[in-house]
Image (cartoon, rainbow, N blue to C red; front, side, top):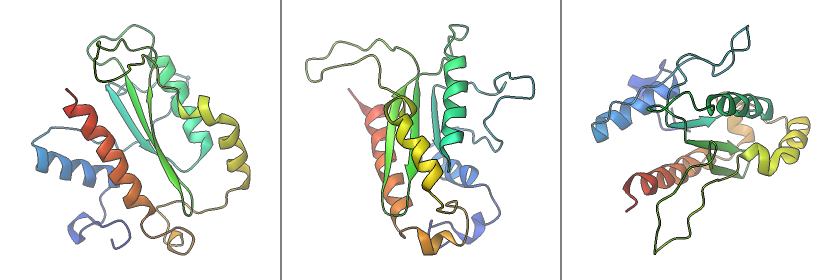
Length: 177
């Protein structure tokens, strides 16, 4: 509750459910939190519920990131129109640092702009920093951000700082003119 600023009434809820509930109440949105692992099934098929335009994750391992990329690339196959995956927002942190990286899923044609230089592809974290992720996976013994022991091995405000940065990035995405 203290480190990640959850209320007493949210104890016992999945983090995704608590945070999406807050966002929905505040903005009047109707977003849905998924409370299951985002992984291929036993036959190697992508999740049936993987129908979104923006995917947001905060996972604790490089292996999980590479698994997410595999699914997102499989979803970028031209079969979908309404729910075609377009963006991936990846949160990652260590003891004192972290990053929020926005990637495109495939090429996305951008409108012409006099104010900005547009690009149709933002690389995925696994493409940009794949070797670093693999090395950090072998070296990092930092506990999961959901464990109580993380309080001793993770800076108190790293999660909230990253959440603020990612929220700001999304806000700019939704209100961009």
